[in-house]
Image (cartoon, rainbow, N blue to C red; front, side):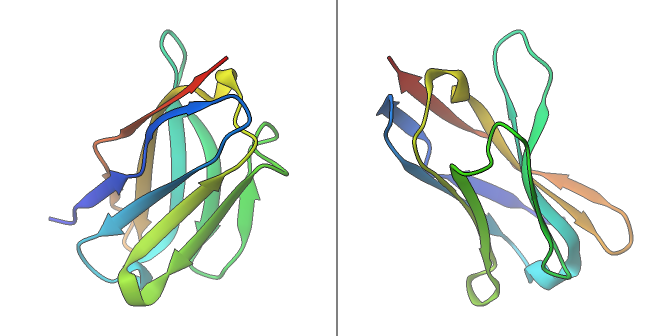
Length: 116
């Protein structure tokens, strides 16, 4: 089946930056949406940023102005550039894709920790 592999997480100090990558095992044109979700300990998973096959982009209010989602079709990869990170951004970040035939795929997650 389709595999999504996240990378780029790690430990960063308050105000720092990270770039997450989500590499897909097949062309990302196969997906109507690709997005990033995160889940902090004790909290529900939430949508952070989304890009559709048509190129539209949406961000959670908490991410606007700080995070940027982008895609590189040639590399079958979606990125999440995270700037001005805050401790409240600490979470496991998951890549997700939904195919044109409405099948969902999830990556294994990558940990982002922002220290005070």
